Length: 298
Length: 182
Image 1 (cartoon, each protein chain N blue to C red):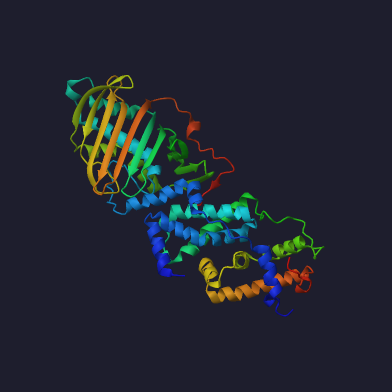
Image 2: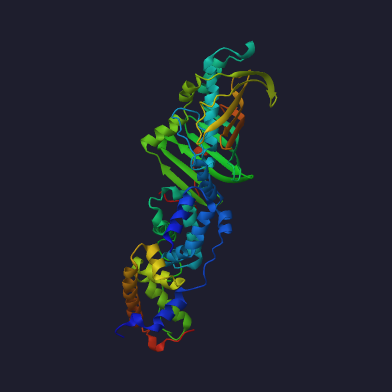
């Protein structure tokens, strides 16, 4: 057997042993199994006509995935609009002194809120998500994101460890990103309301007067200035409303909507706020099950 | 391969065009299963690995530097995913047991086991080549593209890898003389 590799029997034996029926290549089935991956890819289409983000603007961002930015965007816009209080004074001579709203928010060490988010681009399926944001100045931030009532993912941001986690329970996978100093700073600045307040100082607001939300007396303001909104497309119109409790001076409801020149639309609502509630440290610990697979970072 | 067409598909997928990514999936799914199988030695696990590979590729296609090296990039992801799965299985390909002896060479299952042993005794690059060649009959061109080596190198390495397999089998008492297709 000088040249065994040329023997026909070996080819046959290898084909018989290794070869098998052609693997199924059902892309539709794959799409069902990995909705988040699909969402991340299709969201790239929305970036094509992107504009440059302003560094210190409200970050209603559609970057790689609107899903991953859902809660963060909500929090940022909340903080930013709360920043309107820096104008001082009260609305319609009523009881809310807006300067005190900022102080109250600054003093709050924790909060929880519910967030609804939708994004649509002509020719693409509308994305609708909802989630809960848990934030603690001591431990960091956790977000739960749901789509069609099903849990899509948890995200964790732990500034002390300079790390972010995305955990996808349906797929039993997770990703851990160690942040560089630069990334950490960007992440923190992006959500620093003081920076956002500076941006808003040049905005004008419209008084909305009083109303009742969830049984609470509230007062609201509205802005129509696109300047503070940093999105990845050209803005045609933008509007945001903030309603605060007249007794506690803390936000109760925040709504924002941005429309793009090419039919893009983002809407966001944050509500059911709980300020300064007790949040256990365990909420902010990823505790990833052992059978979850880590997605390698590129 | 129509390189322009594939480059266009990759570019479209990078721009968020799902159907283009679907075309790439259809084109490379089978080869990713084969590549994962070469490391994991289990068909079902390899199919799971291939699914993961495309999930990662779908997410990270924006990071692909050279649009004309999509297959090689995908293969890199596949190797990482498979290694992770191997680590989860404590480093041992799942389908290979510990107590192989080819005592009954006329038995089809024993013979197959002997051949599997021979293939998985190869070093990883040779094993990838052999599995891809015989898993689904991939052409030299397809193998060359996925493994990112020239077609000439594919041919030369294939011959050497088959020689090693034949030698392994001979040492274990299996030659073409007693081979009968099942």
